[in-house]
Length: 378
Image (tube, rainbow, N blue to C red; front, side):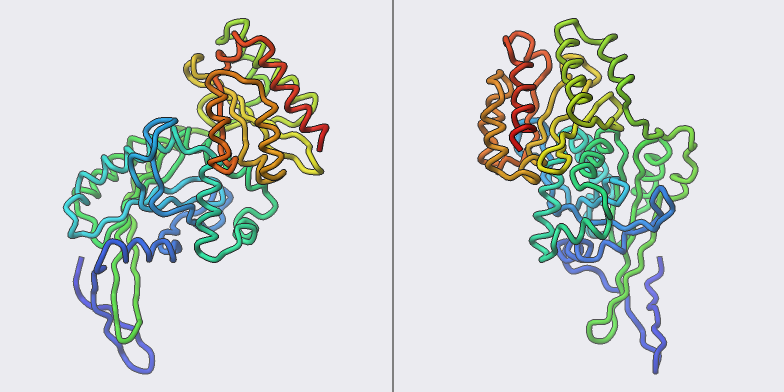
């Protein structure tokens, strides 16, 4: 890359000289304020890509109950619900060559496991508040009439399926990093990996020019379309097949009863994760409220039912969410999570293993009764 200036021609010719970023914090703040410099490519329907900031310094835990072990520089998302993980380094940082790659893969692997929809939604709305923006207005700009809760569930499902972008951003991209990015892009079918070289030029006064160069697009274009996972949305038939083939009779009864109740009283929507899942919406107070998600994971011992308290709180208020939590039966593995809800403002997705409900007499009936009470109460 040349260090020659670029020129702006107005009333007179003005030279803009190559200028580095003084600190990594300055670099990060620039991306947070102006994500357009990372908008390359397009959405599934052909519209231009527009990234929206979910949060800076996003905590990445390594366990369901653990505190964050890592901190991602930026998390963005597009209107298709595809998350974009960004790690920023200046060329003077020696970690830009190899160490940053392992760092990013750690972030991606654990984010896919431990970033639930409610946490992502809360982070986004907190970021809007810090920036003095109305979440409702921002949602309207990039979601239109779509439900915010449904959108964040889609983001969670894409993370779980590995459908994401990983962006390494630096003022200079070394050849070693470019080679690794292109290699990863050829090997990974669900995840796109890019290196973005963002060069800065400065002129007189506050004049600045930013020139992004994208590395990795050739490898992305070379991926076989058939090799990419087509987002299949789980159907009730998919769930029934998985229930019948994988679950023991006691757990099968619980999973089937939950889905039957959803069919009778609410609306089910299949997920797009690599494992069968369904989220259920109930008509409450004149709106459809996302209530719970049944996930049949790769290991039957991990099949679980999670409650969308973040959505319930958002739509119906904290007092109603607290009353619903109090009405749920006391089940080991769930009770402790319910007791932690007040400290989290009832903005969480507590889950319970289906197998934990089997030895508890009346647990399933208690859950269905609590749901029915809230549907009819409101």
